[in-house]
Length: 276
Image (cartoon, rainbow, N blue to C red; front, side, top):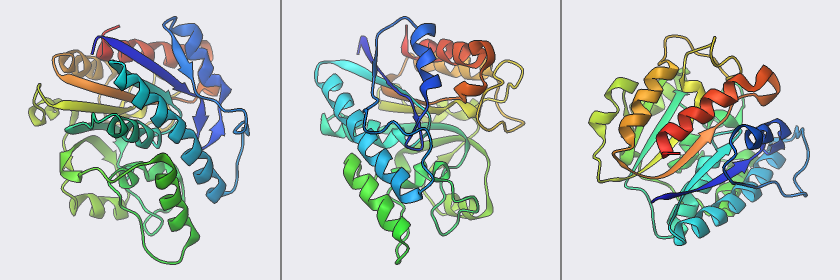
């Protein structure tokens, strides 16, 4: 695909984050902003409402992704959280262009469910949601997750077709769950050995996979002993020889990004991957 269709979704866990719009000033290429007026709350405390908001929001993203693929463009999204990946996947499937492999770059496992989470943070669950791992039982939050997935149109992706790197920060519950999963987990320098250039590859990049605090001070969750920005740049350069059909980015804390230092470098790295 020669043309990139860029989607900016300025939200974090269903809450409006207007600071992410500064990307529009940093990167002059055209972006389609998905920000429905009905979802303008900067803070939502109720977990069930957050999931409802994310369902509506990423259903809109899915529709935009599907339309862009049908006209021959490659969808690229930037949002405040990894749940956006569900909208990307749903849109690819709606357009009949499901990826054959998913590369998930993240310092964390994102593989919690309500039964294992200690923080009760939805941001620790997207990869579990991505493969359809949802708890049973009467907890209304379980049904809220299912309702969110249904609203987006997300169907479980085969775990064996996912390469996770590097997930160096895991809680006990998700570590055990990942060990029991067919998801392939490797360090960043072994990613390319798990991929074939001709496969339709979807790349989901949580920017906090990088450990480079001096250059990226506004990343959400710094985890030490990870790859540098230049390590990621080298991987992204190599991936340009692969059939990358979609890219999603989970962004930084724009409100903490003095001088837009983090935004500028992350945008530069993204453009390395997608060829702009």
